[in-house]
Length: 46
Image (cartoon, rainbow, N blue to C red; front, top):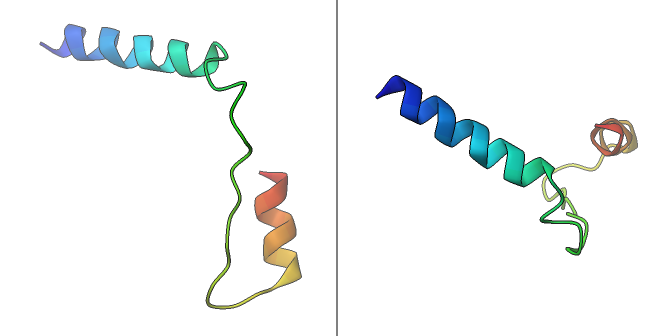
């Protein structure tokens, strides 16, 4: 059971990193409560 879960997780990670989402638009983050430029810069760098 644990091996099957590990194989499934590995397959999902492989498909995710293999470029299936290369044609999608970039994700945008909306800061609704507070806006601190330093936090925006930090998250953008991640």
